[in-house]
Length: 164
Image (cartoon, rainbow, N blue to C red; front, top):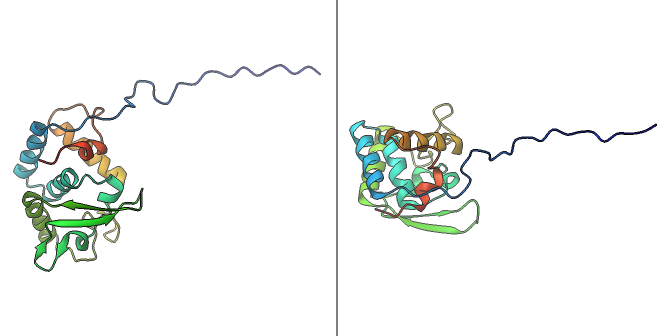
């Protein structure tokens, strides 16, 4: 019996039409547009998350896992924090600016978060934090809010943005 080779139809590459290079950082002007819009809308959670992402330069997986205890000390929000990175298992220290401390204080007090609570708890299960996918959606929503192309920016855009 003769076997004929099976003809396999070429599939579309996973990255066709997608930007796979490094995503650009946000510019100073874009950061201020986002901050002002979040302040005007009184989006405490979004503002605290945005400011912390810009200031800390943490990966999204580390940012969403922060607890109140990580940023809070006896007298309030600490000027510096240190966390262990998930990817590298190395400790990283970052400064928390006055603007970020104010946003975090408002967010924590408004939601009556305890020290053991996640800073950004899930709406579905308060004992869990938001997912990195949810965080990515929030980033896209922020970028879209100031009329930028959401395909151009991602969660790492906050990481590469200079602390302002």
